[in-house]
Amino acid sequence: MGEGSTTAAAERDAADSSSEYSSPLRRPMVYYNSDVAAVDLYHRQFFKYQEKKDEKEIYRCTGIIIEWDEVSKSATLVTSSQILCNEESQDNSIYYPNTKMIAHLLDGTTSEMELLYFSKHYEIVFFKVNGALDLQVALLDTELEFGSEACVLARDKNLDLICRRTTIVAMDPCEHQKNHYLFIDASDCEDCNGGALTNFNRNIVSMVLYALPNVAFIPSSLILKCFALWKKFRKLGRPHLGLKLTVNFLDISHLENLSRVYGISSGLIVAKVSNGSPAERNGIRMGDVIFHCQQESISTTAQFEDVLLDVCEKHFEKGINLNSKVDVELVVYNLRKRSRRTVSLSVELSDGMEVID
Image (cartoon, rainbow, N blue to C red; front, side, top):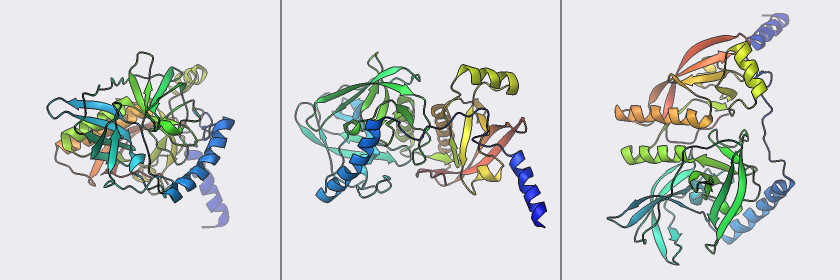
């Protein structure tokens, strides 16, 4: 094939594919926190990290009590899995699950914690605390709203309360951050890792993750779903689709245009497709819109993750184990062709961390 033919073919392929940035659904992705204080903290944190590594210090996190067993007088808590990470791994990819963990309780006592389960992908870990006094179980609320005010609650190394007012913001994750991250408008939350994000009804809507350069959180709905699956099967999995998605449609003018011109009122925009993934082989491209998964409407990443965990649960119930192939059905809209199609992806059910490359 000659050079002219190759160029023409490439142009036709480009015209047939959607583009993340040319998509009329798209607003610019926010990859950074524009707060000057946050940027300064990011650079200072690097040097703190170096000092901590030399001093052999380990992580310290706040924990949230999610279950209490009256018979055994033990509590189950959830916190950030970063507490298990090797400090030499700046991307939190090396874990030490056999590390001795101590819980510092508010009455001044300590209790050794028993590791129950940790998820590398969702970055949460469940511990059992034995021999503790009666501990109050947190009230987890699965409802949250972008733009609403909330409070970050955590404990510092002296167990003094940290309380910081903030706002839940609509923001896309950075390149290295997970698809399920949601964010708050905060900069300095270094001591709040594993802490609670509460609404003004005093219910916990999420767990805070210190994930620079933006402070992230994992919604309570996802934590409860993971915990329920672990209790039922003693394991947790997730279909790896090889897709990174953006947040929901964000303003009324775009919504009206999409509804009027394209007939779309909800969905998630594909921001990145992993090379060689089943999604790429089935023609899914950046800028496409996914608005159904497993025949359920989706408009937020939290909803999407919930559906994927439902896939995991149904296959576990059938006796299908981890590392097996499972089918996930998506309804995809290609904006350039103005065409809608149903795609079935055969993907791996994995308990590992999904990397979109």
